Image (cartoon, rainbow, N blue to C red; front, side, top):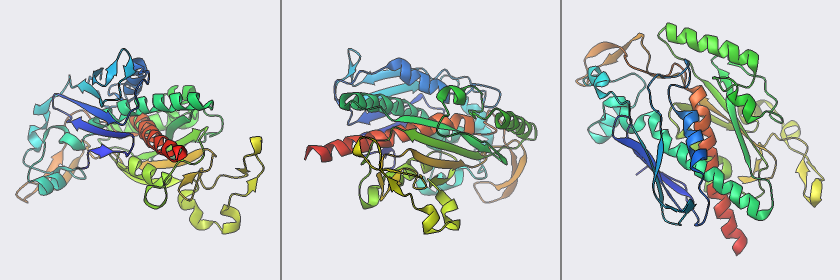
Length: 367
């Protein structure tokens, strides 16, 4: 019913923003994978609220508990379940929303689809649901590392960063950018000048009772050849679904993306040239590492757009549940810009797609 993602490596998330907790069940995880709980917690710490003055000040430690699927530090082959308990939920802060719909939120659509809605925090539509994704993505990263080690190859290196906030765009060398550079600033933008401008813009938006959107850029180095399934499960199609399933996303492009509109075939095509170890490579990478829906071994490159946070403290027009015009100035703790916390979410969804397609590719290679 829309709560499960993946085929061979599948996750199902559960829980609500102001319920007892949120979590995930992973199915399809091979047995005997060493599970590094510290790494899972590190990824959750990157996502959690209250990291800096740029994010919501909800005070959650987001400590993960493994409920099943691990014995003696290794996966058992059974479903792996993880839970993060909500510690700083304040359901009463949303009582003023009970009789009206927040603009650009899921309040109206959930109400009309199900005949009811979760008032506190938006329930399943809250970005707090992504805790399960990030925890599962951390396991997916560990699986990718283990599978690469077994084959004697370098594991995929997933790097995402804030590429743009509102009108401020970063200038980043995709070939050399590192995780240390990304994590060096609270914006998660590795361009120091752009990061400073983004910080100023986000802080001004908060003071103005407004919010800002932007884009996260991702590159995956050491991409294996052959990931992706024909027609409906093309690698970029599954990546698009993964990214656009994240809260607040509004756009996805791979490689040259929409810039390809203004190019010709002669300038857009990626010429093949002889590569190392007898494997061809390409001189350029307008394809973003994917051709015919299948990875070609070049770095995977894509970009995900996020809208401005829907909850703002400025007064907005809306209607009540009985269709009467009214206004709303939202209260509570909210991110003035989702981009800094979106980075680990994008990393996690990338890992989930790659883990799923890697296991599917192993099935092909066994035939």
